[in-house]
Image (cartoon, rainbow, N blue to C red):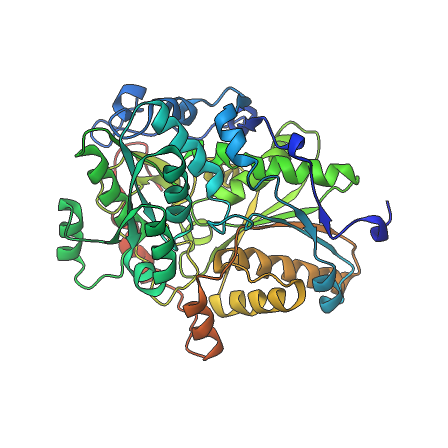
Length: 461
């Protein structure tokens, strides 16, 4: 079909919202390594996870054989309030770049949370309510997940306690206030409200925090309160499962017009949006039905894929969570406070880590001034102010499109626009004022984190 006949926005109907999540692990030859008990180094059983996670979410976390899992009707009904989300053709960006490449993006910012995070927040809140819990605890970095979870908890009548990375808490007060509007209690992390928070503050006086710190506090808060469980917005298998609605919709929209992407790009912090976007495409690749070039884009200041180690490590700074085999910078690694674009987790999804380790996808790291330059160009051409996290994917998409300009290749690029950046204006202000820098950790900086990775037989790296 000619390019002129492809609309700017490819919409699906309400009836085409996925009725099932897709579990890419079912098609992986090499499954993600299991979570380990940090004391025994044995694979964790469901009953060991029960004090932390909701029962049905544990089953989803451990299920690596069921390809499709039904989405409960209650969740589908809430999905209909903002889904399906559009798949867009970036005609104006293509023109500005002068590229023969065709650029598409899946836009997940058309809900009040401003991001894709609501897809999993609704699911996790639903299962918590179904279990009869009083409330949930969580962490949030830039604030999108905390916002989404506060919304979902309000819908289902649950208490919500959010530990927000301190640097984001201070830089993004309006994101914090949206959470409070939906009834959440928001605490800057690390804090004095938990034992693990106090230990972190003692070890790292004046620290601006990290997702690893906030996870530790949220887990302690959940396990010390009757009727609470911990929920997580990225990294976990269950989260990537819920986010598969992104890729399933994107693929269905492109299939309507016979469009097959050559390159699929997503920003990568913990892996939720990237894993969700690529899931059905990766499934085809794993089954030998099609091939795609898949690129994870991470910040140069927190380069888990490109400079990390593939090893079992703690998911949290306080070292109270299970061990996960992933690409990691070490649980004690804390990104520079100068890094303004979210994506601050020290590790990566075990699913994506295994796919990357097996050579089924690639990764690049980008510096943040280049990221914000791409964000600004995208805003000026496509009219959407992107979240800094999303702008990492925009940067890589622009770079790939410019390579096509050099070679004359007419490749089709799909990237994930995870959300909007209207609560990130402090970062944009620093960029416009020339106050933003491109801090990149040295090998010596990274080694400090690597030194803290647990050492036991079978965990060599």
